[in-house]
Image 1: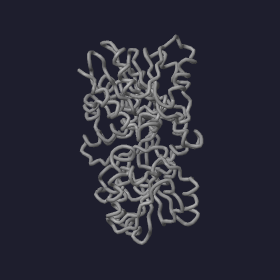
Image 2 (image 1 turned 180 degrees about the vertical axis):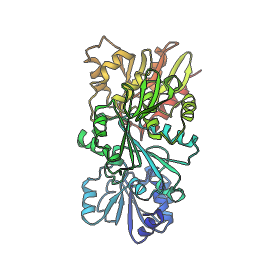
Image 3 (image 1 turned 90 degrees about the vertical axis):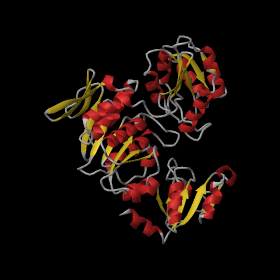
Image 4 (image 1 turned 135 degrees about the horizontal axis):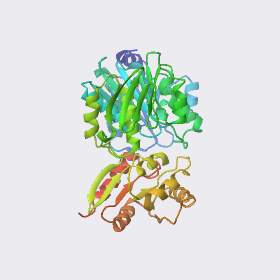
Length: 459
């Protein structure tokens, strides 16, 4: 179905959009501009939403706000917000009454006119997605970046051309109910994550697998050969499976041989670049490049890959250097919302660091974090709901040797303490190993707040 045909079909229907956050506002405004009846629902009240409430009502939207925002939904089409389970009782009841439950991303995959490349995984997906998008841009392609990063793309679909490329980062929440897959799918890795929302790890994996299970034989799926779960998934690929590996050579895929990044297909292979070309620190970023190269192989010349890797300094909130003050380097790794991501961040440095961690608990184990903290951290500063479990994992680890652990109330105290203890040559890094939802709307807001505090330190 074309984008215009879809919008035309909605003009005779009633629509509810759940969530009036930034990601859904373009969708609401698009529907209203086409004369479609829209009920905008949000658990926040009018005061918390601010001026947007009056603006949407002035354009014709009906608002349903506050604790009962999901009560008695009866619209023909309901767009759920990412992160909201599709089997909530209120949504299930609406579907039983005849409503169609969908999402902005599901509809985008139905109407998008161009090639789609999508990335998911437990760690590394944002950086990998960004690398793919930037490489394609440098190769002269028109790229539309969206999903968890970039912009909501459905409202912009009418401007897309068949020769363009849409590059998306997709979460397990977005993938749970997807019935379409991208032309090129990438799974960076899989580890327990978001178990505060998913029923169990099996459901989380099943959601992630939707990125390739609806592909055709002509499509491509890229898997991490070093991750047991994704390596096993490669055998179930519907289209062509491409593997990447930092640890072993592959018969068909992209891998590391010493310091050389090799792409091999059948009887031919070539050196794409050297690891020394990669400006980003850490072996996990080597893996991100391996995944990205496997995704764009044949679409982007190797010289563009090399030149880009030498220049690209990373994505905001991902081991982002904030400033160097009195010889101390301050980093923002707010994207690290899981133990595995914090472990990767700590492994990026050759020295012991001062680590600030803690946030909202996702219901996952922190046992793997403790030993790495003991090996890579000289002072552990904790705040947030997961402070106790991170402390426990560190103190109960077999290599615990009395690492100093300090609890603080907030980032102002954390930064002040780290500043008072850091010496020239030290590294201070915020890498929470937890989500931001105990105190912040998302990891971006958390990272920006941390950066503001660090930048307020006197020179």
